[in-house]
Amino acid sequence: MIRTLLLLSIVMLANLARGQESRASELYKTLKNRDSLIFEVGFNQCNLSPYDTLVSEDLEFYHDKGGPSYGKAAFIATVQKNICNGNFKPKRELADSSLKVFPMYNNNVLYGAIQEGVHLFYIKEANGWKHTSTAAFIHLWLLHGGRWKLKRVLSYDHR
Image (cartoon, rainbow, N blue to C red; front, side, top):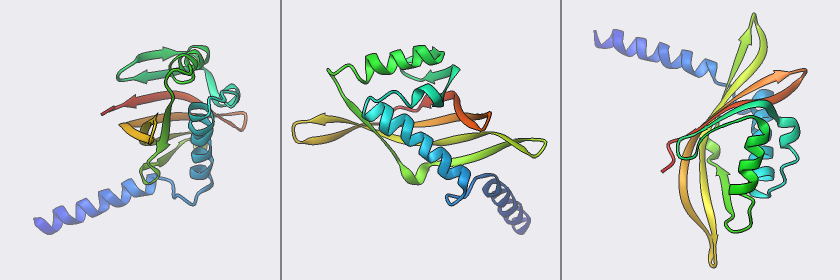
């Protein structure tokens, strides 16, 4: 019985691992780059120009503390108001080892991907950056005309 359960556990883990993209894959690298444009350039540097091509017009953003946001324009306005207002400047870092990418296919044709991970947030103080919170995220990216668009965001487990 124990051998059977152990064998089933190994098979299940192998199947789960197969679905996740390798860190060396082109898809993984592409979406990690998109994450950097959304957060390093947009969120951290308040250069929101990459959002024009990366964010879907009908984006849905669900935040466990700030509530939902619908549409690209509302998302950009929220970032400008809450992140880039000058009074308070947080910084976001990706917990690099947490990033996972799962491709999505329709009849063996790649149409999207789920990207999940953990991000760390900091606030600038007189003596440097202070860690303020950690949160999990799930992004649904869809491929439209050869371009990746951020379609859905879940930002949760802020602690």
